[in-house]
Structures are given as structure tokens and as C-alpha cells.
Figure 1 (cartoon, one colour):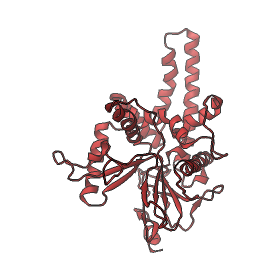
Figure 2 (cartoon, one colour):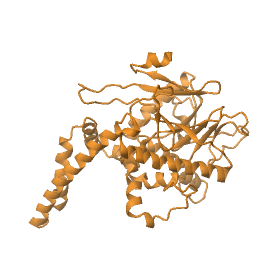
Figure 3 (cartoon, one colour):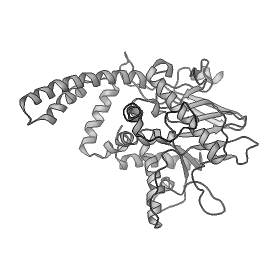
Figure 4 (cartoon, helix red, strand yellow):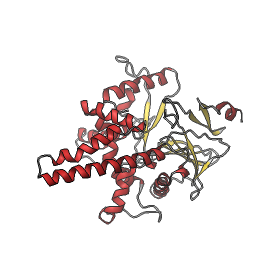
Length: 381
């Protein structure tokens, strides 16, 4: 749900402090999704605007996409995490981090006692296993219609005016940086802007809950009133036209929301054509980004064989009996799941389970089921 910065960072502090207290992690690679996209925007603003102005330099453009690479191949010249577009901190033990979130786990008055170091990759982290197999880790919101709406519209309406850079890969219509940049306005509006709008935030929260429950009465009422409110005070025929257009808009939007639910809650990308098409657009941009890593940084990441994401909610673990395979690319798809959801016939919200994905040099990737009915069977397998 929408939250103010105060609420969001209080919740994050509890989580990350517990992470540090339990000794689970010292270094965190954070890959933002749609709800926490503002974290990525804040990092971009801190690095490219605030820090440079503080030192007397002019700001520089946002990078939009910063790929992370964890290379665990024994023959690799540099194993571990690399952010090729990011400079290491100064000093003999240079590391990534030294940004605003590094102090979130520290109790007040005890700076450094429970410090975590945060590195940020967006939207993709590429993990190359010791065996040389690549897995892409991403949140997955660009597979969803709303979060890629502006790029889809732009490519249809003003494509020739965009002045897009040349692709290294023929099939890719947009680079990853272009995909992120074009969709930025709507992403920021919904991830953080509406959460900071005071009393309006509560109204939008109610609407969001209604849509998730597939209850559209309040949405229909507001949309029906929207255009007549804009045309209020105009001539009678414009007001009449606005009323008719408002009713038509309400019907069209609600129909689209029902279709959106079918895609957002799909148990398999292949079940929803629009979701699969957006996945292919994202995957082509991913391959274009890997070509850029090779050309600009001499980092060779093998063609991905797995993709781990979590935005659409049905969990699908590493060792499922019937893996999801996208037909064109042949990539195997795994979903962390973890959302509560309402299905037709249910009396209320339910937890469909989740998958925690793990990697080690010895075992490679696997996943552990949480709250899934088939978890014991799959764990035994």
C-alpha cells in the first residue's frame, strides 16, 4: 500500500536492524521494485546531483540502469560483485556503498555499531555461477502493463521523435536505460508521489484496495464524475458530452482493470499474452545490456538460462517438476511469490506461499518454500 516516507523508513529500519543483529548479512545488494522505486531514484539523485553540487561540480544525467554482476567462475579475473558503471569508495579496502541508506540499521547514538553496506543495482543483477550458468535477478514490474505503459505508448505514438540510440542487438527496440527512463514519471508517481499527498493518499489507498479485491463500484463512481467535473461551468452541450464520455471512460477503464488483474495474478507468463509480450521486450533490453557490458567493460556474461523475479505473485521454485520456460528464448522462469491475494471463491485474503532463493559456490542455486502446501514434498525432492 501507499506509505509516507516516515512510515516506509520506520518499517525498513526494523527489518534491516534485525538483519544486522542476527548476523545474516554485512553487505546488501538492493534491487528496487515498483513500490520502493523511490530508493533507486534517491540513489541516482544523491550520486549524480547532490554529491556533485556539494563538491562544486555540475550535476550529470541519471544513469537509469546500473547492472550488477556477481561472477563466481573460478577463472574470473575478479570474482564477487561488480557494478561496472559505479566507482569503488576511496581507500585501501574500496567497496561499494557510502550512500544514505548505509546508516539505516544503526541505533540512534550508536553510529556504526550495526552498520550494513548497501550496493544498488537496477533493474537487473546478473549472477554467473561457478559452473558458468547465468541467472538474471530482477523485480519484474516491467512485465506488468502499468509499469511499462509509457514506453509502450511512446513506441507507438512518438517513436520517430524519441531519437533512440542505436541498438547493439537488432531485435531490441529499447535499451534498458531507455526503458527505465521513459517509464520513470508514472513509476515515481505511484511508488512515492501519491504516498506523500496527505489526505489524498488515504483516498488512493482505498481505491487500490478495491481494485485488488476486484470491487469497482468506487472506481466507477469517481471516473463517471471526473470529466463532468472538468467541464463544469461550460456550455450545456459540453457538460452533456462530458457526462456521456465519463460513463464510457468508466466502462473502458473497469474493463481494462479486470484484464490487468488477469495478467497481474497470472500463475504463468504464458497464460497472459500481454504479460509475455512485455517480458520479451524486457528480455531483449536485457540482452542488449549484456552486449554493452562486453563492449564497454569487457565483461562477458553468458546467455541467461534462468530468470528470478517476484512481481506477479504465484511462487515457482528452482526445482519445480514442470519449470516455466519462455518458448522463444528458452529461459527458465522462477518466481519468489510472497504476496497475499484474493482468488474467486475465497472468503478473504490468503498467503499463496513464497520461495527464498539461495546461491552458494558449492551447491549453485536452490530455493526454500515458505507457507506452500507442496513445500514438504518439494523440499524432500
